[in-house]
Image 1 (tube, rainbow, N blue to C red):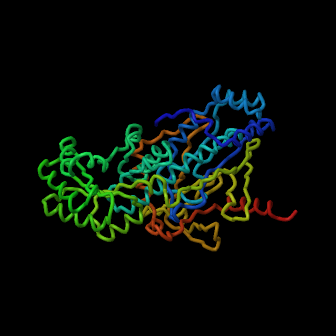
Image 2 (cartoon, helix red, strand yellow; image 1 turned 90 degrees about the horizontal axis):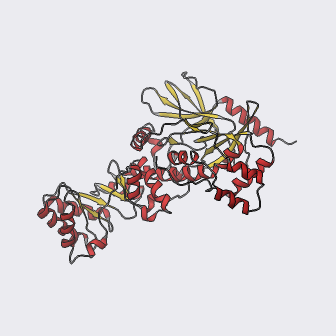
Image 3 (cartoon, rainbow, N blue to C red; image 1 turned 45 degrees about the vertical axis):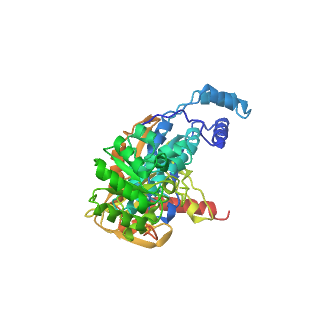
Length: 478
């Protein structure tokens, strides 16, 4: 895990004003439970991908207010000295649970839960949302693109289009977890071991008298991995012929061409024939230029001859829907050891929260090991693995379904126990493998790009009863 600078003050200002308010209200030691969840899957997809836990751990494990932070807050003339002294001696003591990175996740599920003193549990809201929202968004988009490529490697080429330095680095990380083969972001290779990939820019070709001269010099310098950009002037009339000439003369160990503009299907078909006719059947073809899952899907259906894809701006910015939309809501308070569920009511049904301290289970078919449904329960409940276990869609209670021959798995792991890190972070390669395996547990109907089958996310009867009771208490006329 790569350590970052102290980001304690990277927070919404109201987190600090509320903390001061809790302090002056005598609520320093009151225990609260907060859940992070999201309401809709980006791009109308059937699932999202969990990511960002490593950076969240780094943040929570390094929470501390510096003398400069305290002086800055003092100068605001808003905070009492006793509160500033509390911050000076601040130590994170919360419990934290989360769904592991690489796991498919669905709306309304508690993907992160924080339990602890309300000042602390409230304060970390901003960074939890910033970190998890961003990487879940990029991982989800990247996985759609990787699946569209049908096994062909996808390289993340978006560094120069990312929304800032952190977005470039962590976006590359999230994309790799979700299935990308590598990245153009060099620092992501240095820090996370994600293979740095790339060829040349058009400027390299323009620096030489001809494409042939540019390609020959590149082949001399990089004889073991020679991939040439052939669309600086004219792909078929000059670029590919010059590349063929250099490949036949220099015989690099690995050879390829990249096309970054034009009609991808037409150009790759023609280029493939030219390469094959020249006896260069091992020469690969890489394409780039504003690609996304739909373009990739379509050109493959059209018969484009492509071995690799380089995807930039539409991946690293999740251009089609650049907001993940995760939220962080109070779910319960704890007094004298008793958990008191809390709920947020809204006229918008989708914004009504699920109360209480919860456990999240995924139910799998025993034969196929495909995921059948997720069930949220009150903490301490278990899922009876009995034939005919009934689930329903909480947003459409008439949609009931009985499950047979299944087993249940608790999806979440504990990250912190009273502020102590207790989670053994997996290697990024293991996370990537785990993500691929978990995607394979989803049915094809859930994986569709358009109009995917809605995945069941159910509430246990006990949790439903608590929610129903609280809704009635807060909505009945007094």
